[in-house]
Length: 506
Image (cartoon, rainbow, N blue to C red; front, side, top):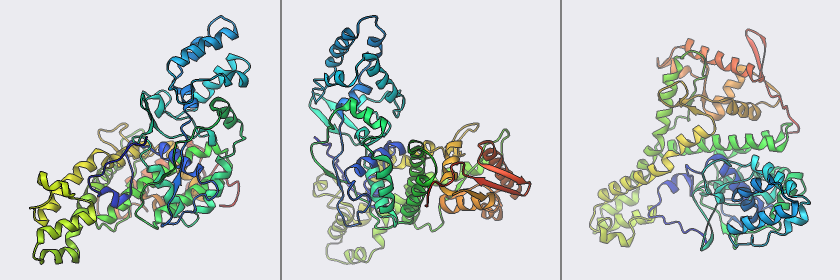
């Protein structure tokens, strides 16, 4: 039975879609995305803005039970008893916590694994690759690495009444990611590449997963994906270009997947901030003023912290602007001049925001309030609701992708880590690129402000001196040299080099 989502009003949803969610970090968004893709292998990423996309995720109760609700396998393996006794002891222990949803009879494992030790080693191997395997999340909210189609399953709540999809960690952000890439110009091309690279049933690790799981366990019914308010958006195309570039590099797909996840997180964060700026009438592009951490405190640190705080406030401002924008419409002006202005304004609020509902009349939110009072009341409600989850996206995702940090500082600022820098190099640099050009492209595509050329506006506004940004640029160059991503030919000539080159055409 699926969880029913109650939406009292829609403000966040109109700005960003239904829905972006702070607790669904980028790796969870990509896993949910792959679940949608797995149900659309015949037409991957080809859905238009008016097409209804459906998918039927997998539950894989047996697999996830074996991996994450099976603490007995190690203790049984270490006992000095016969193989037959090990299987019998383990079977008895596992049955005590079985869900009775397809995991009552696990005897098929004996036909797959000739020795109990082989079975235990398979469990150990797959657990070592799992996301958040050591976290205190419930077993039905832990995920194995997506080695292939049999390793994909949705977040579940499992209790005495059965299994239901939970919208806490699979909150539809992956569904929106699917729609975004479907609406990118090169979406169908990307879809074919992802299917070819990630959905081969016969790769070794997927065969091991299938051996543990047995036949797939799909959800009872297909479902429709969430709502994305934009038919086209520049960020959709930039995300798609990033993924196509990463997939073209000469690296194994399982290594590439880590970069796809980081790229997805960074681009989703940019989409979130870009939509917030547009909604609040801010035409300036999103910028991340980044401190490249060095041994000594830099002058860019305070500026980077200010940049972080400014971006943190964008979404809250957008929510208020979205609600108040109704007062600027011709319909609102017409409603105010009507014979029943309060009622007409309430109708407009219902039509746009699904609020107030007729039931709200009894608790003072509906009838009897003027248009201005309704707008003020909804703005307060929307801001409070926004603060609970959507308003935390900037801080949660920036930290998750390695863009922000509090290391060596009293407050959070933008200080990209090595993993993020490596992903950006792999996405932007086909083979080699001049260092200055790389900085320009990183600013153009991701809003990263690092050197003096990219931060010229800040120097002009006397927020920082050119020398400080030049030093920050030098720190990045040294950092990339240490990572093997920059080759210095002379003091004035450096090249960023992608160690994986291009394994094919982008």
